[in-house]
Image 1 (tube, rainbow, N blue to C red):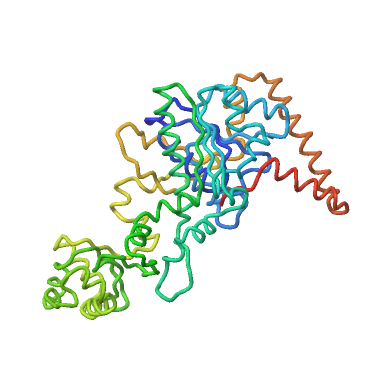
Image 2: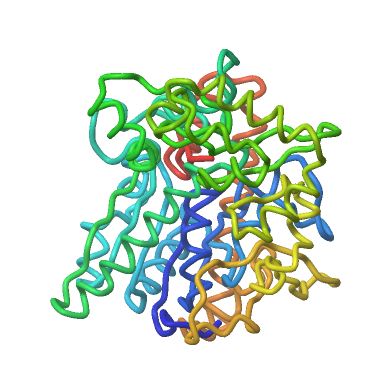
Amino acid sequence: MKGPLSGYRIVDFSRAIAGPFGTMLLADLGAEVIKIESPIGDPSRKVAGPDHEGELFYYMAFNRNKKGIILDLATDSGREAIYDLVKISDVVWDNFRPGVMKRLGFDYETLKKINPGIISCSVSGYGATGPYAERPSYDITALALSGVMSITGEPGGRPVRPGPPIIDMAGGMFGALGVTSALTRRERTGEGEKIDVSLLDSSITLLAYELSYYFCSGIIPQPLGSGHLAILPYGVYKCKDDSYIAIGPVWPRLARAIGAEWMIEDPRFKSGKDRVEHREEFNRTIEEYLAKAPASDWLELFNAEDMACAPINNLAEAAADPQVLHRNMILSLPHSLGGEIRLAGNPIKMPAIDESDHAAPPTMGQHNIDVLSGILGYSEEKIRKLREEEEEHREEMERRVRKTSIDPAARRLEEQLAREGEGKQDE
């Protein structure tokens, strides 16, 4: 993949969403991302749901443009391969709990002795420090603890999370921004960097507008459905035949367009503050006028009047929308197992990015030889020895697993080894 980050190499330990989404963005921008999977694979390969030739949608959504390699980090050969990669790489990325990379021997302090310019990026639930640092975390727990869920949903309804995993994805985006910033700094100073991004911190950042409202007013924001704290009209409005339309801040043009000019001078609706104070009455009045025609008719009129509005598309409609397709936001990529897969595209557009060069997410170990032989220059004998060690360790782990059914002490040992080797990852 050609792009502005071509020439940079990233060693990617991350799993699930938060980490893989961030490294996928960097891969889309041209970075060479080598995805490291243990012999059991990324957990996102094993969730329920639809697949393409056995490759699950969940995994494919966040791993395009990467090279995939299997390494057993519990073996000497596996660790050696990682250290050899670090010597010739720019970034090491993970989304384990704090402390896991150190136990594995791949923490920033260790790696910078091998490569002083290395950049380490860790995306975790609560960050590397603080009273919650060791807690497990997922997108939904960060949404809940940060307060995002307290303002999401309809007034009086139960707390809900947004449809997309926005905090996992925000953590990945902030991690990618941190990496590009650190690479820029290294160009000037030659120094590496340790980047610490948390899902909770990312959630708080996304609440910049709501928190500022609270700090200025002392009023705790509540759920408003699709509405806006300080602007009316703004939201989703019901039209004839139970159709809906999304309308932006287009006052007073909206009043004129729907034939409600009297609302412009009505003291309840005259100023923005007045409309916010009479929110329910304002929205109810607007919907009474919109009920005279279906959303499609209003969309035609409002677009002719250059007013911000949109239909409420479902995902099939959005994926076929002419603007979405024009912007190449739906990718069709040939897959190594046959056929094509379709994925959401990258919103960053610039001449330096060759969008015709996207590659499908790698299958398990698809690029083992490319990386071990082509990049690291390992001989066939060395690769054979590495795989033999992996097989020996796999057999050892299987024996331990069999023991756990009758030996509680062995079960505890197995659980400890799993925590040490993989760590608890974010969703």
